[in-house]
Amino acid sequence: MATQQQHPPSPEPGDSYVQSFARGLQVIRSFSASAPRQTLSEVAAASGLTRAGARRILLTLQTLGYVASDGKLFALTPRILDLGFAYLSSMPIWNRAEPVMEALVQQVQESCSAAVLDATDIVYVMRVPTHKIMRISLGVGSRLPAFCTSMGRLLLADLDAQELHARLEASTLEAFTKHTVTDIDALLAKVAQARRQGWCLVNQELEEGLVSIAAPIVDRAGRTVAALNISGQANRTSAKVMQDSMLPALLAAARDISRLL
Image 1 (cartoon, rainbow, N blue to C red):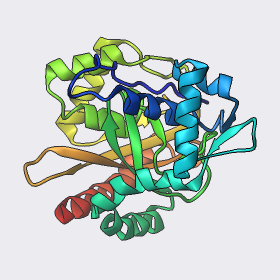
Image 2 (tube, helix red, strand yellow):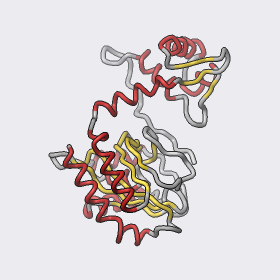
Image 3 (tube, rainbow, N blue to C red):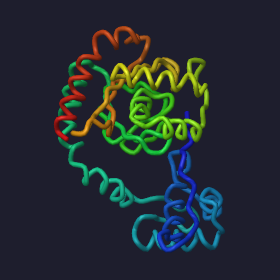
Image 4 (cartoon, rainbow, N blue to C red):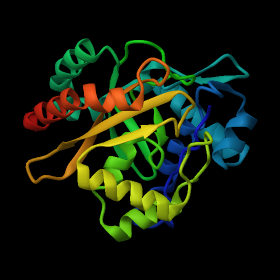
């Protein structure tokens, strides 16, 4: 299952906007799990650039060591991870949170993840897996739509009403399963429920058989800065069992991580 990444519209070039840099990021983002190696024409088409423009950027990235080429196909190199690592290393909270998450996984015997909100998506910043429970592979940097995920709804719940409406309106409200809620009014109700109870459970809305429950990670001001979740297979761990037997441990782990902030 692939998810469409949502990016904010590009502002007009000006003194505070470097168009060439933005185009370089477009080229980097054109590479994905479904397109790890691309021709020049494919990169140009995926990034919305001319062949000449894409070629200049690719050759610049190649010179800097972020892209490799065999003469026909281009691919990102491991050095590109430096860009993502800069974010993680600037927030040492996740290094300190990892033992808490590992202890939670040992206790509940289900996978545990942490994510932050970016536009209409959640972005994984830490993951401690147990079994492979999803068809798609998740790791640090993976993105999923916020509207149909437990962590996403909790993160959306921290937005004011105007911003929440804007994010949902900008989302691609795709029905991933027969259970997926796509009506905006119904989603607003789900987000409001998550806000009231302080946690969120999503049952098979992102993928058939996948159940997840999330708790907020809050800063000193009480703002939700990230979310922590447990996910499992419905045929092994039902939504009721997850809520009854795992939610207390999840909430405790989220509080422990929040205190680290």
